[in-house]
Amino acid sequence: MKIAETDIIELINFNLDKIISKRNDFIQKDDGSFVSKGDLLCDKLIKEYFAKNFSEYIYITEESDRPVFDDNKLYIIVDPIDGTENFVSGIPLWGIGISIWKAGQHMFSMILLPELNLHISSNAKFKESQIYSRIHGLSSSLDEKLFVKSIKGKREVRILGCCMFSMYLILKGSLQSFSNPVGANVWDIMPGLIIAYNLGYDVKVNGNKYHGEILDFNKKHTFVICKN
Image 1: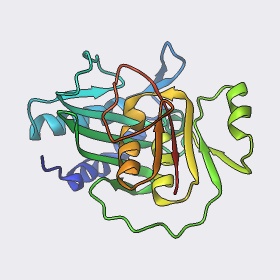
Image 2: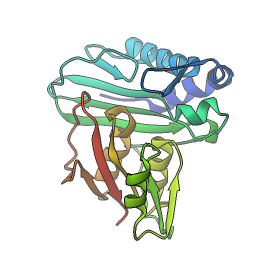
Image 3: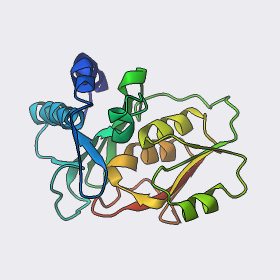
């Protein structure tokens, strides 16, 4: 499967002003999180792109109904806007995640940070990072008890409110680690986890060493990524 990542980037960049214009039109869901019309527009654009260019796949996203997990299928897993709280607040730290799997094998993943004009994908050729960092990234979903436990022994900690942005930072070497001990959805974490694994990072999911497999999208998963 050949993925033209430049086409996806151009699609989002072409519609970016329209996406941003919808950040103030949002509702609060039953779980307390927001979904904006910007999320829905991104979802529509990406879904239409894949519908036009590919066939026989199952499209998995936060706002869609999800089938029983079967790792023999072809899945396109999408988070149209990760960091919606940031997005609706006018903070440019939000991202789009796409991860494609066929019969349990990883085909392609990418993270886009449209307002920052940054992206990273599994197609990229990486050089070993020369950045020194002692900063540990944490998920914004931590409660007070888990937060206190998670910062123990760490001098520098950041909570950025966007998994895609934090994943981008650790992949570029700007974080020492990034973790979520609460549990995150697959569309939030799949692109970053598989790229980190392919780069040889120390990746643990649900307390066990991660081996590059697709994760069940009907469950939440804890994770820790550590820069070597």
